[in-house]
Structures are given as structure tokens and as C-alpha cells.
Image 1 (spheres, helix red, strand yellow):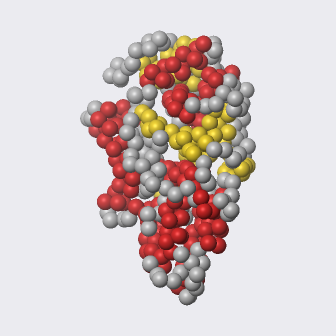
Image 2 (cartoon, helix red, strand yellow; image 1 turned 180 degrees about the vertical axis):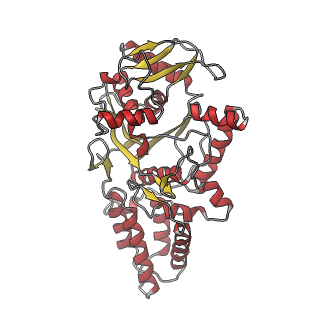
Length: 414
């Protein structure tokens, strides 16, 4: 599937002396760890279910992983970046039925909106942007690989995966069985279905139901379960090295995906390949509004496209999102866009001056802050201090140099 227009980025070649290894919080270890130094990183980020436009919660997640992508590239590494689109799913069918639309047309329209939002927010496009429909054979092959390991069984005409074959199942999440079971039931699972060997076992192929689409497969006409699509797409397009302990470097998404989605995808990947799925599991926090997490089911959403249509500059949205640490859940405040717009204008005014405060020390400090688990709160404090110094008459810096670095590292099209 077509992604969106690529961006021209600098490699940060002139900053090798001050570039620092990126450290990120790994949900698996529950600690901030340094990524190993590599020439190539494999990054997989879970994409949207396209039944509504991009809201600020989505935007915060994709801006977070864009920062990771940018930082690694700035250090001279290659990043192989894959993102999926869950363009077959119950919520999509339900929304299409509610609105009297064809499900595929609804998906196409929302995917196009998402592309436009990512371009506006200056997010680097994935190397492979893959929908479930186009990856159907890849997913069927992945399920067949699980079958060959005797890790699946049928309940009626549906096919399930035995999650307990993964010795690390639930250990990555650090959740109790009780809490995990509640999440599973709330987030698309079916723990109480009669005939399952284990309440946690994951659906990998759902037989076609009346009024729903279906695809031919060795398991019957139907469609894939949620978790298998991501493990299959990631393993196919990121091309793991068999000698590595881990298939990919980073599995990313919002923290609502920790369980069951990321844990079960990892279990399926391990059983299929014998490799641990991801070296790092990295998760962005949720954004709330009026005391509740932004959710399509609740309807308390602020859409990126509507903000832009109302005249909000996309870079102000990006700046506002960077005002909170990526792992923190927070409630969206009414003044955030106003404050970010004013700060953006202040940065631009200072970059337009003939004389600016020293920029080399600032860039070094920015790299240090970003390397420390993407400390964007500190990043913005540093930029504000530089603005103050410039406004007070400090000189010796290069506005052009700083402008390029802010674009390459932070995605600010100043």
C-alpha cells in the first residue's frame, strides 16, 4: 500500500562527537536500557484501524516513534520501518454498517485522511505501509507455520493459537493473570468461549460469518485474528537475521497494546520462528479529554484534521505533543495549542535574527536529552532557554545550523 511522501533528512555526520546512544524504557524489563549500537534497526509500529480519522492519541504515538526513527538516523544508522493498517476488523465493520457504508470504502477514506495527517505532522513514512487485505497470503503462511508447530487447534470452524507454548507469555507485561484476563475480555478477546483449551488462547483465523468478508485458506474461508496480522507482517517485511536472538529491535505502539496485542503477537512470533520477537517493547502513553482516555467508542476525540481545518498549524500540534513525556498519560488541556503556537512563533522569531545565542552547546544538550528516553520536556526547556539568551543579546551561534537540526531531530519544519 502507498504510504506518503518521503522526507529529506540530514545524517548528523557533523555531530558524531556529541551523539549519544539512545536509551529507551523497555516494557519487558521495566527499565530504561541503551539500545545496542547497530548499523540497521528494525522498527515495527502498530497502525490504525481505519474507521475514524487520526485523533491526538494516534498523533502522539506516531510522533513518538518518528522521534526514535529520526534519532537513530541522525546517528548514521539505517532504520527499516514497517507499519500496518488493520483494514479488516470488527469495529470497522460495525462503523460501516452504522453509517450505511461499504467497509472497504470507509477504510480507504480514513487511510487517506491518515496519510494527510502524517504529512502535515512531518512524520517519516514507513518503508512498508501494509494493510491486512494486501498481506492476506503472508498471514495465511504465518498461520500455516504455527500449524506446523502443532500450536493451533479448532473450536467449531475457528482456529486458535496455544499461547502457553511461549514460556514468556504474560512475563513481558508484568500483569497478574486476573488483570490480564480483564484486559483480554475488554480488548477483543473471548476468554469465556466454550471449547478453548485455555481462556487466553488467541484467535488466529475466524471462519466467515454472515454479512462479513472472507478469504479462502487451508483453514476454510474467513479472515485473520488481530494479533497474527502484526507478527506476520513484521516478520515478513523486516526480514530478521536468523543468528540474532531477537527478530526485530523495537515493537511500538500505545500502552493500551501491551496486552493482549503485543504479548500475543510476540508469542506467535516466537513459536513460529524460534526467535524472541522484539528486543525492546516501547509504548506511548494515552491522551485523555474531560477525565477519560480519548477513545472512538466514547467519542471524546480531538481530530488532527479538524484542528488543521480550523487553522491550527501542524507544527504547533507537533510541538504541543512534545510538551509531555511520551510515556506519560495526560489530560489534554484547552490552552496547549495556544501555548504551543506562541512558542513556535517565538522560536521562529529568534531563528530569524542576525545574531543568535551559541547553538553548538544547545545541540549537544538536545542530543543528551533525547538520548535519555526521549526527554522532550527537557528539550523544550533547553530551546526556551536558548530563546531567552538570544533575546537578551547573546551571540556566536548559527541560526541555520540550529534550524536544520530541529528539523532533522524533532521534525520541526521551521
